[in-house]
Image 1 (cartoon, rainbow, N blue to C red):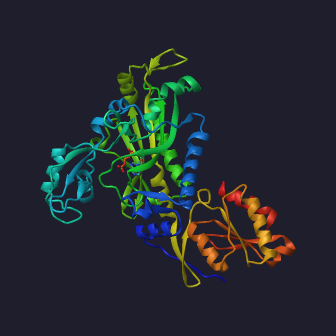
Image 2: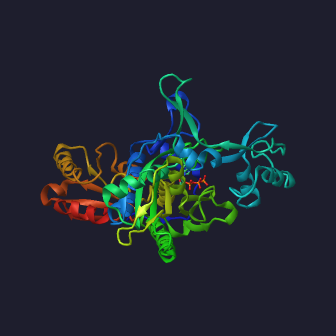
Image 3: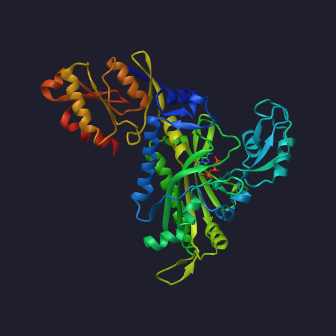
Length: 467
Ligand code: ATP
């Protein structure tokens, strides 16, 4: 009988990065050219994992709700959008250089990491410089304490639209997907007969010229967001509070349903001086990463900041006409904003596990079956025609409904280990008994228990677990 020893382990980011590369989840970007710092490409299993996460998010927040509709807006927008939203003037970080080793540093993060105070939005550049001097904070690279004064660095990527660079208009790659939602508010109300309260959701790429990217895919300059702008009547303070509280619950529950362990999650409320320029209340959900607690998603009460600004800058009336009271008003907004890449990263970290099987180390990705990139693998016990024919038949039937792999190479133990490392919940093996009784063994990834089941029951068994 197989002897399994489970252990509690300290997860190391390096082990996860290495498994990701070895097993085709995440590759370094532009790999054959020596890479491009802090860019990452999702390999076949990573792409499928991320797609499953996005589609689970879309199901939960759009498909299964009657009060949210979807959108897919353009990355490139009229530059006035970013003047209106405040990003041209306020979307910046305090940048400092170490005079000794020339390392570029975010002043607010240096304070946060060493003194444990959140100073993201509240302190002036001068105050940040003073705190660093007073506390003699050191450069994380060379250990010296000699920095330039902090200066404001805008995080938006600027580019040019048009053929001739000198005369072409300067435009930005969007730093968030939210503004595409606000600028389409009127279009959605008019075309979908949406009635307040309702939300508009979108998933898409955003770009920020981060000063200190790193920690694998945690902070990159190109990333994907999953955002909802939920519009409510500003007069109804109870609805606003209930909607905010309700989103707190459903966002938290969404991470649990994704299979993330509760003890690795926590809420954190933003201090008053930490709030973004548009928000009067923000909660983050954070995860206990191997490098410390970090933000996964933010839930912000944005008031009517954005619609007011876009009405002003565009000259268009963006008020909502209440069909019952005939009253016109600018709705207030509650915004849950998730990162698709950070969620994919925690799905990988949370799933990563090592145990010992018959004295040998086994690495296993314990993904919740609904997000596992491969749901089942089909093996013939040996590469013999009478077995491979049946196994391929099972594979051809199941792959119409699920993501399935077929593997007939090498020892069966090795094939199991490979599937464990990519987190496949089920391995189905065809052996000589199959020829006579139309049954196969199905092995469950976590318990490694094997059961004999009828071929005709396989689709039902898998469906019950992955739904
Ligand atoms: P942080 O404080 O980590 O910079 P933020 O508060 O600026 O994040 P938001 O503007 O609230 O982030 O964006 C919403 C979500 O988008 C974040 O919770 C995160 O999941 C994701 N996100 C933001 N910036 C990045 C990035 N540079 N790389 C990967 N994901 C990101």
